[in-house]
Length: 443
Ligand SMILES: Cc1ncc(COP(=O)(O)O)c(C=O)c1O
Image (tube, rainbow, N blue to C red; front, side, top):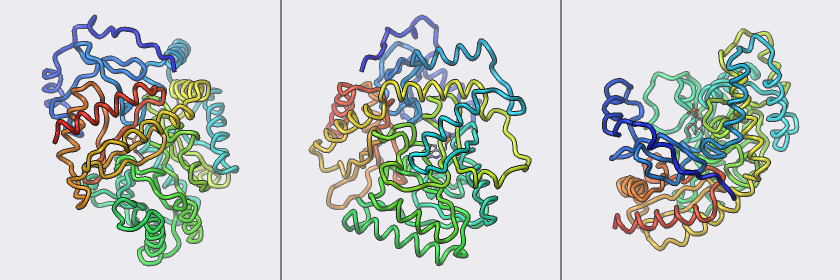
């Protein structure tokens, strides 16, 4: 794929040294979160899949600003769309009409018809957390119930309700939470001790048990990420979502499908990750890649569910604004015109295939779909003991080698590879080479 990769302009600006930037941030910005690396980097410019620091050092972006920069940094069509829009109108609240809101809502809902033909209504937010909050509001209003089931090791956001449905103790720092949330086990075949089929069966039995024992039996909804991203790219088996969503419906609940990381073609072949599983969500939650870094979230649902909030006073200042709509439309245009779902499938298959060939017993498992790949690192293949220090060292060393990737998992031992969907096979090979070298260096 042809990508413009002109020399960076970074050197033309007198940027402060990284240490000075870090000190200023440490003094004046809440330490939530701190910088990712032991030796932090300062990124001041981006061109497609490449990032540059203040000295013009180039990095291959294997993490896309945490699975967000779907079509690449400052893609020319994205830049033009935003510039054109800002020249005309930069903000108008939902109190006035602007054609872009309805147009993009229709476009997004039409895409969602592939997973549920009844999808037709969208509510726009500024983030994934806010979109997941909205999903809870919709589910509660529609069902007139308040209980939710979520999945252990999940992550759904940073607000009170979304932390309440996130299943990782490391993120659960905001107690007390809204009542009525229960957790079901994860379909995590690598750690379940059985075959992948047995793992799925155990997770589904666990969900049934949770519904029977930890709820009133009639719930508002079931939150599930299609692939658990922050939790370490944990990828449920092929039967999981079809059966889980049916089970949840039997208990009166809506299936809330969190596609914040898996949406916008990241998992390859399809626009939504859940298309790989053939399950039918009642509500789809999106953010991140939808705006390529421009803040936007979305909740997609059916007219019947949407009707339950009719007439209620509920408002956000920015949702569906013309700049966000220009950004999201440009992203969708590029994803379609450049065939990025196909590229994610093709390059992702090469990347996963090569990662699986790395001969190192500390590579416990390579998993995921398309360009959403996790490499779980362990102390030894036999014990499967998580190796968070090794993971931190590998990610840091890869950064020094010029390749940025992420870290995830409840135990902090999964390397997350979630690059812009425009990356080439040569880029994929560079990521694998850097990971292999970093592992060897950390021996
Ligand atoms: C699956 C999932 N849902 C929701 C969120 C929250 O999105 P945001 O950070 O935009 O609030 C995230 C963020 O990482 C996520 O990965």
